[in-house]
Amino acid sequence: MRLVRVAKDGRTLWLAAVVGEDLYTYVPNTAKFHLNSGLRDDFVMARELQYDEIGLAEARQLLDGGVPSLDEDVMADPLREWRADPDPLDPETVFAAVSADLA
Image (tube, rainbow, N blue to C red):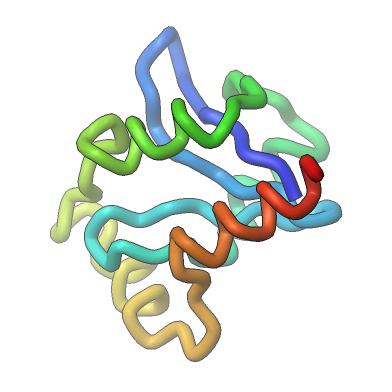
């Protein structure tokens, strides 16, 4: 597992955990990481966004206000799905997995 900062035009959009070819994005509105198939498609194929691998310290800083909350009206459908997600990943679980992969 590795962590990436996802940005567009230098503006942070997401903190993502890359697990194989899947991307789990941190959603501030739920305070969890959720599978994000749309972003996965961009990561694997289109590459319209910028993906920069980051370390744990920077990832923790992004959790503390560096990732913007999603607009509840504009993102109503994805947020509804993420809130109903039966298998979200807790940030500490993600960070522990990243630490184990680095060891």
